[in-house]
Image (cartoon, rainbow, N blue to C red; front, side):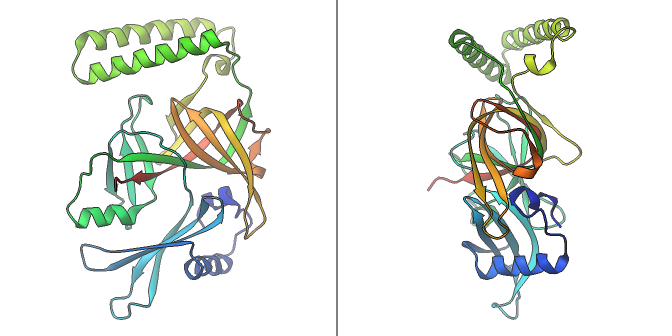
Length: 295
């Protein structure tokens, strides 16, 4: 059983028989279907069924070489389709070793770490790969996430002057990081000095203040799986949706984290606190991504 099934409202699915019936239903009553041929001339298929807005299960596999009508199930995964554009930075993609699934890597300078995510639209990527069109320039990336456990935290109170100051400092830091990547030694030295000053300031304040009153947002790799992260981000939008198959309620929220905006969903039973716009979400997420190829 995929442990992130509960994030989209399948928390009570525990038997293999019920899961098999569910996946068969996804294939037969798919909301969307995608097909392509692999390098070995094998017909690959992907069947996706939504059980709420932009949220559902994808079943992936291949068609029998002797009987094209027979679909052989390989694996499945729960998904949340994100909305909007998270980043315009270039993305590189690598195939997973054990199956025909893919991981994407995005180096967005605003985050500070390389973001690794589970690729949702593998069929368009395989098509582009087979046609020799890679790398494709001008792509954008829409990120989304599933979570199994989270906590709602109150925001850090800031006035308009503080907000404008934070935005200005963020832009300056982004420009310095970009210059340092190009080999500017002065920018690299400035960044090093700023980090040392920040470390010194926080080390003094943390003795008397709570860490979450000092840190507004963060995004850090979590555990040994490369596409899971521990995050703290501001909720900009939030709504409750119901899984049409199980009737379970799920929170879908838009989170602003480390200057990146993406959608996130979590079962209402797994979230401690009441989510509202302006409050913060803290939890562990499984990051997914959808590459928007230019038409």
